[in-house]
Image 1: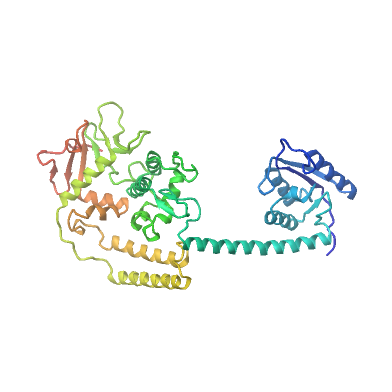
Image 2: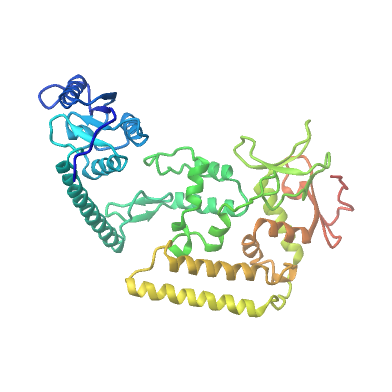
Length: 461
């Protein structure tokens, strides 16, 4: 190995971890650091480029503003390398420091220390660097393996690694325990999202429930939409992962590509099902900065009706399912050969999952190939079963008992289609009375509710 020829100017990098109140031999002021670096450059006949200084920055962190600029200049060939007063000014972490030096070397740069301890421009310095990098890689791998073993042992004891997820609290022994009120809010959030609730509505629900976020250190804070998405997308809440949320509900709550964004199209009462008795306009779901989500008419002026969205939704669905009445469930349709193939795929995926679990002595993680394959197979079978009897008819329900649970499992567009097959239109009148006094329904079979209503008001769209 031959010494590297330094043809480009070298930058000077200065770092002080804490400026205020420092003195004594251990403290090298920015001015003294620069002086030492310039003296080295002069003695070796090297040109100086720019001077970069990070004040009040720890050497344990490699992400420092001015240090990043130094690396960028070396990478762009604007600089031939960097001079520091001592190697601990460059970094105080072995792994991070050696990784940065390796990056500089690969970019054709050099690292020099004014005290002469480190010089990657020489053959000896480059050899020492490579030995140190090999030792660092070995140490990093050893630490990583120890950490993985420690995590596995901790999980085997029931210890949770990382911050406690919303709805749970960490106990003194490291395990998680349910927080009854908070977990109830989490379940409600999944249910709301599965019913077509927006991220804003779910975030407001969690905020009003006074749930602490992962970054609030146990204090109740306002939930952002992103924090809400993180909770809803956390697989740890799935029932098959030991969580409290049914798998179908968790799946339905997830963000989907092409999710409807037109107002009123993202929930079961959308698409103009409910109309204003005053002007005939479609009622829209809106929070409008209010505490409760409502159905309201957008027409300007007073006297138009407004009602709680959840109240209207529950009342209308109850009427629809009560109107259906007891029915015989018809024989499932669809391609039975496809159903059998999907069932076999699920069985094969489950067998592979269990085989790997037996080999490992524990259940594979939710991101493992086997777990993903099993989830995909189950989802494919579930998707087939939800549409195998399409179009979903009213006869799919045995009785109103249990109808709501099956109905909630359907995607929102399917929910609207089923509801539309039962109800022709709904008209909401102004007032403060209960829903039965304000809501009038005409069913697709010609019947009306209340039964003594001669005719539901005809409204135009």
